[in-house]
Image (cartoon, rainbow, N blue to C red; front, side, top):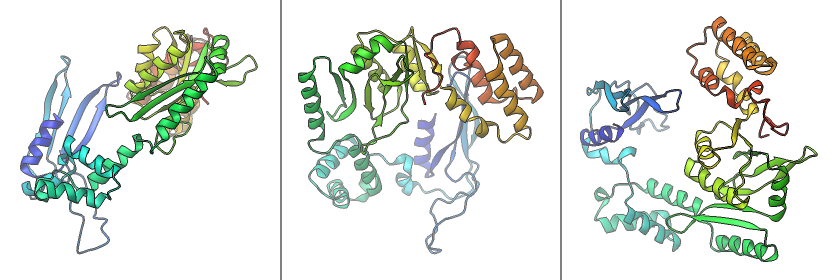
Length: 380
């Protein structure tokens, strides 16, 4: 639907945007509305009064929207083709949605960047080759953004080789050292996993429950550090493997979990604690189908003031929620306390609370107390 509306907008000469989307309890988008880029209200922030912002929002009500029906097909619900401003078909190619760098142009930009050519000269060479600006489907800004993004994944000269040599040296000294490196389609470093002999040995004794977190830090290449952490018989945190990943999607997490599982002799943990990341959850279901997945209680409770702070009875709601979560000694007690809270404060339509209730077996303590968690409930 959005692709069709973009093609239409380019033909007519206006900019488009996603106005709103709404997901169901299963996390799938069920409603979507796309609109003219000038919908809504805003004032120009240009410092120069003679050069106002070119795409000031003016309340245009042109829109295109639909919903997902029971058959899994999208059905048109709203349609308004009338704009309250002039259209510019000749300038449509400059709108963000219509700017695209072709594969051949990307290759040339990368080659020029590797040769040390500056961005402005790099872009001008593309323009000259195309026979003019009107024949180029992107701007110098897009060229700069592409180079910046490419550099995030492309290590500086010698860095990737230095990393590989370091791993090989460690492996030569210790047969128990394990590492795995994933490259992208252009042979650039994408993801890394490694674990030393101590981590592999510790997992055999203390690998019943692990925590996995992606929020520690990132390096200068914007690769997230993702340690696998367990706890020993002294209650101390121990490292059970390490990763550097370039993205946080299901494909990347699946690769990382499979590398870690292979390192640990294909022996999955009994339990794993993570945050509420959907991509991570799908990867865990794929790679660790027998592992019990628990959500970090600290992450959830940290969001309570933000999610419920707008209610007039927020103090009473938060107090009731905390009591239901921490004071319920059985699932029946929790169900009763939760139902009373929802009914008393009329929270039946609160999507955040409904989503948490649907997944209560992943984070409510009374549902999880029958399983071994090494006294861990958070990834902190």
